Length: 533
Ligand code: NAP
Image 1 (cartoon, rainbow, N blue to C red):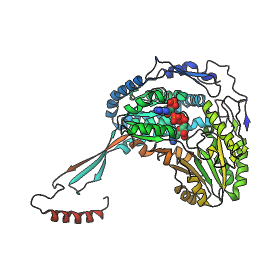
Image 2: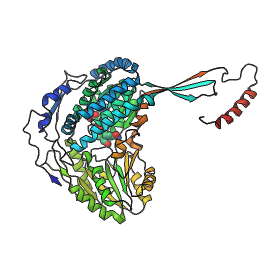
Image 3: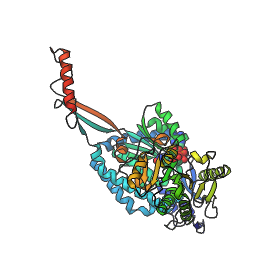
Image 4: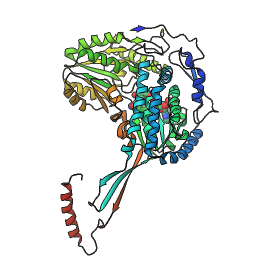
């Protein structure tokens, strides 16, 4: 691994003392956008690259949060009354603004999360893509749909989609810009108001997009941001929302779901993963190794869809491991706000503790560290080397549990059925990856994997960047999907309206029921053969 001299914290007038970051007054201006809690006992957050104070955030109370929902509810009616095409124009303008002002977004995402700029760009591009997708397709997806009625000609049926009302969005710290966009923008497009709770660690990125959305024409109360710990304001969000969209860990998702069940509100949960990659014997080993570096170490592995387990066919295992380790060691670790680094830092001391503990525990349980395996305080307080392990046994915590860091276990296999079985042998089902020269075979293997997204000859980026298809988790990785038509329609109540003319759906006066049911039976047989029924 190459590396650069650590950041010197000698620029206290920039956010987090990070050289080249926006000035502190910019953070203050963004914080003033929060909807509540400005008189509260604030919390101070630290920048991962320097460990220095980054921003002081007001914290809402339970009562503050409920008041914000009341304001959002009032704003929702006027927003929903606007034609969908007018709402779309706001998103198309937002798409332009995001691309135009991307440098500031890249700085903020890097400073708050510690990720490399190339990974921050993933967030900018996902945000722009999702704004463009819903900016172009919402009217079509939400349009009333005519359906074949119970009796041809006599029953006219249609399906409508109404907004839920006020959507509560709870977001994690790892993809603060992209996940805000992916979850908030479709909720708004469907005609809802949104109250969002970002994670304190990365609140500025969400506030930045919020500011841009207002510039793009979004009424300010239609999307409101509250800050606070989930343990303090989480219940208010669940109690007041007409739909809850949660992204975060599986344990928190389960806790929220049990509270939501008491209200029978609808929800989606985007949760954790232990994502596998299968390298088939015919794969291009060098491409697979290069792909694995991106798949495992983007955002220092703090990515829900990143790969933590690799199954390589025994015939190419040694060659793959050599190429993978070589490329991993060539990754440049750094904290610069430019494109020089291939991998950045972890985001919080808790993350560093988990990653270090998982690696030490795996070692104690017999694993071999092929490369990495240590923290790098010489680069910054939260740096940890990209780490490849072999010989990981079931006794190791990371064998089955998500590490959410730059650590991957490589295993050999002899038969593709065995690889599929081992890849599926997990409580999770978020993302997976298959590498082969035969893409048809790759798709066949992909369809056997129990994961919400599967990428052939890519780690995660192909599905992540294709925002027109749904993304989400099977098994304990979640409930529901974001992106695509599903990611918009989940924020609506479907309503069926049917108009009956002429004949009622009961025997008319004087007609014996047996004759009526006989005629209906014959009719149903004929209708089955008609197209469109
Ligand atoms: P987390 O601890 O579950 O927190 C996620 C969010 O939930 C934070 O804003 C957190 O705020 C809030 N929260 C915690 N307890 C809450 C409660 N009782 N009520 C309401 N909100 C509450 O998850 P994390 O550690 O931040 O994020 C990493 C996890 O997210 C990983 O497992 C990762 O795989 C998963 N993730 C999944 C996806 C996906 O699309 N499937 C995407 C990104 C991340 P506070 O902790 O500040 O209270």
